[in-house]
Length: 218
Image 1 (tube, rainbow, N blue to C red):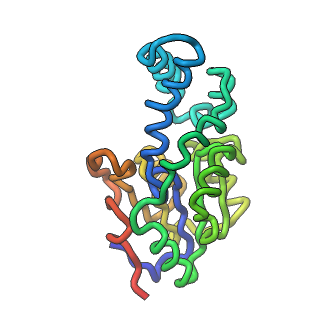
Image 2: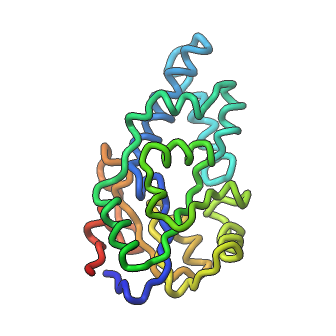
Image 3: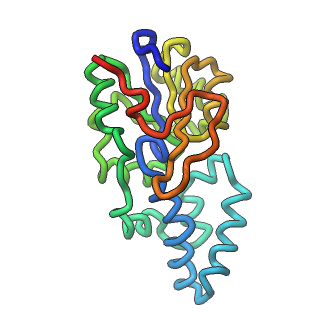
């Protein structure tokens, strides 16, 4: 599916791509509602309804991904709450070997994530995937999420790359579409971001559940 000789740069999402999205889904739908309910003496259902309303109102915006915003909203330390469930952070199948193979082929590997730096640092601390990466970028560095063209413009300014010789792997079609508008030629969608959930419907991009489906050969 991919001609690796035509690719110099590989841009990689983190949550749902390199890492199992189950951690995030569990945190926002189970752990945070539980802790918020305890702190405010309300039921978990009331807490979940309150949080869901705010989450859905912010989808795709920089605020949606901002842990400072959520800490202020719930008046709790979100990074500290995330540390309570560190055991759920894990890389997805074949992710480490995939990064090792690309590194050995001399590809430039850049992590681009909408994750807030506080959450990003926790995940890198646990998984150490950054040892394979040439650069780690949070969209908060640019004050623009990957959904916006401003993100891609600033990425290009910081780390020039040829969009025609670049592969981008993400689990969110709307973000892949943003990359496509910028001119990124090779686009892959992960259809199984949460290992505890069924695979998603295929997108119009190259679709894979796991990295072994596109593993380069030496």
